[in-house]
Length: 442
Image: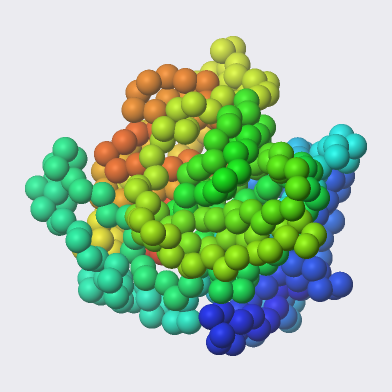
């Protein structure tokens, strides 16, 4: 697989971006569970890079985080990855070097369950991005300079941060104004149209690969069943609107109506009208143009759905016989100066979270900031076991949204020794310090 440069068209303009491309030109990887993941990553860029296999559980030294797990790859060099794909699921891969992820150095990584091959079901993968023609480093510099992005600070109330009162804090939804929002590299001005069978069944695998944007998924006239999140099966939940935070994935099963038709599958930016998406269309169906803005803005993502999710496989119960290790992490920082961290410390000044193999580890995440944060743990799936101190047997995930003023407790089995990144998946928040690590003792 090549980390390389490519050109796409965004709103009629050529855009030079990165990509993760197979020798035959395919973008991303599809493999089967329980098989070896044997991939040679070749860096064709003129700068260092390294790829993280988001959702997989490789050995620590193949996790793709510079210096934490392995050195970055110099221009022109390559690295051979080789480990077993432990479980099926909708995953993705992306750079963990600088701000390359914002430049679209990301791709789907689908691990199929061989048992699903017998299903009469069409798979459709949708990779969502936020896109800018600007230099991401300049965006970060502007944010760090305290000026905010153009339009990104509109309506923000700093009084809560100054007073320190969580009760008074007003949520701030978006840091950055982007030029476009993409679904499989395309906008709604020229969306991908996927041909489907009238009355057929479709499995959507939707990946939020955006760097700084949460979305609401909108199925329009269709109703679907949410059957998996972050690659892990859940007890199916019916609906036509689902939240999808940065780095999360949603598998949604659709039963299409009989007869010809076109069906937009849309992703609308949190707190905004901007949207992107694809079109499912039967042969011969008329496909109407979909505006790239909805009529009404969406609200903030919340955890109403999260509270209803239950893991379909309860094999992770965090066995009671295990020793329990508990950590509390406060999510800290603000848009003022754009400094973020855990427990008041930026990455590099932080203290890694100590665990020992064989433990059940619980981490309580408490958000003391005016923004929600999608928190991602490398190398381990975790279960959401409490929201705002209400215990539950929630979904298995690898990324969970912690809303403004809220808390979420996650639990995982310490069964993959090494040194693992644990961070906010808003790329700019991570770059500004909201990252720590989990380190095995002994």
